[in-house]
Image (cartoon, rainbow over all chains, first blue to last red; front, side, top):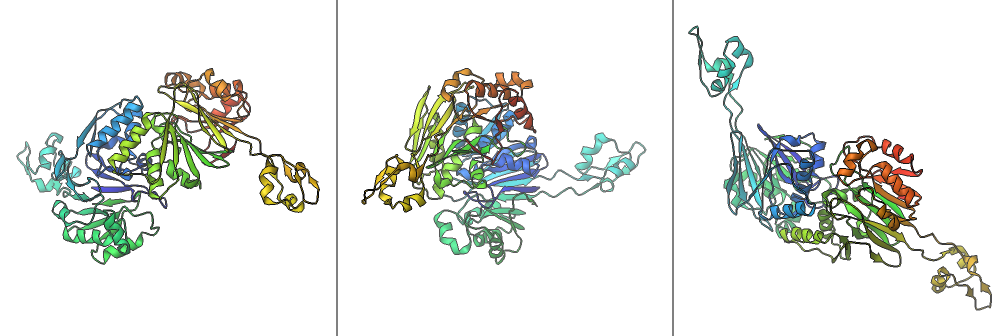
Length: 300
Length: 300
């Protein structure tokens, strides 16, 4: 699983930084988490294929997290998309989108399946490739984070070995599930001769816009990578608290409490040009910190 | 009067081109005509000061003409704007914006005065510096063009001469209006000794998204510069007609019929990478044609 950052800034675009949007690549395609203004152009810029994008998760209805959505869903339609798009967000989001479509006298070329986020935790998506759960955070308006888990897809085939042992392709799915294969000549081909361990399932937690709160720890506990906002540096901690945001040190505290392996920092206030101090502050508390740089893809 | 192009593409962003937005600079500040996604960033990129922007005109409710507006009005508020903003657009625009503000539990830091465009022609703004009239065009949904006229601000003072003839500053306004000045020593200072002719009033017509129609000619007749869309080249004239758009040659025909001095071409379909053929086709009909290149400022 990889996370590509499309926007890492808070509400006011500044220093070439964009509002929040992230793409999570799973085995079956791409998931988009939040969709600030300009997301469709950022997707193009970083070579992320819209056709592989079937799921969009919107954390809350502050504009810097969804003002790019009307343009994106519209452009998908102009490009003639036919496959369904699954959209998850606050209930009122669909009312806004429907108003916008009505005003343009437009119908989308594809089915848009909308699911309104409920108050608490909820399993939103669950298929053979990944699952996504929402969890509530504390912000000025209703806001949710998301936990994306990739699923183990069984053992990984060694194609050369499968050919060498003359295993028919029809049996490959069973090999992935761990079975041995008995050939017609009576030779038993052991599973471990023709497969290796498959990729381990991974967990990515996106903690959205939030006040520092330990209440989110159980939902994200043990994740491989979390993204936590840090709109402010510690010296501006009073602003963070007043505006329902966090500091870099608070983000790092959550990473420690949740026992995660890697912390991505983002949602930087437009008052800061230099982002390095965010990393410096966070690493005083937690070792593996990365600035969520735009265009950069992080292994979860 | 100058027009700076912020976006010249039709709905799908392509080849680095943005959806429609233009800034008209008049003596009192900036007017924004249409506001496609990314306009706030484009304003920053081309050094256009938001504080001087007090009037916004939205032609119609297709997303490529206003999806940047929620972000822009929001950002103005985050920057602590207090002066009023005058917004003109289709009636339903304010309903959409109000929904978006309500969803974010936000109030703007400044008064937003909205005026709903009426069906026919209408005088929208009229002050000592400029006037703006709307006029209907023919598109798939209700759509208006806008005619911006700068006003003559009287004669232009020659500061050195005013000092030389010892004219008190309190009398300058009367000089601009053409009066002579009688000094205390009885010398009559002729107006033409201390002033020259002021800048001529200019007229810019923005013809929005429209099917080719001669009905717009009276509204824009004699303008110094018009912007006319040309989504398609002549070979795709059937697409233009089907989608209520125009070709470059049709835009040029309007320029001829309206007896204007300069034609700006824009709203190019994302199917065309090279824009030069639009100019080539239009100049077969009308001589003074410019491609509305992004970032370029055109004298009206």
